[in-house]
Length: 74
Picture 1 (cartoon, one colour):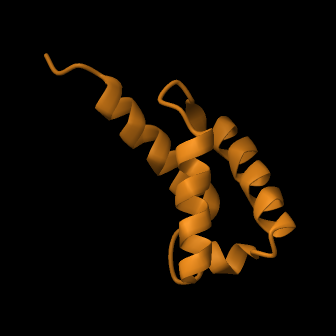
Picture 2 (tube, rainbow, N blue to C red):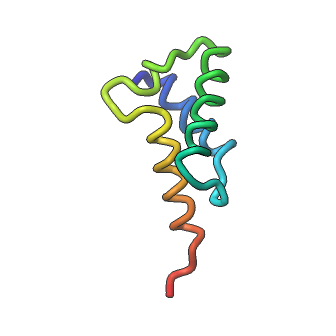
């Protein structure tokens, strides 16, 4: 992962992923959109994934974290 790639991915997730987003299919769609937007800015997938999880997994993890944060504790 490069600093530029990590920052792009963090910012993209913050702007485009919401707590209501759910499921692996939605994560796949969002990952594709993220990769396309990154490419338009000269950022390749390897800059976001190198040595770590793939973009889809990172987005899915963000979705789960947002859902857990939005769910009130009993």
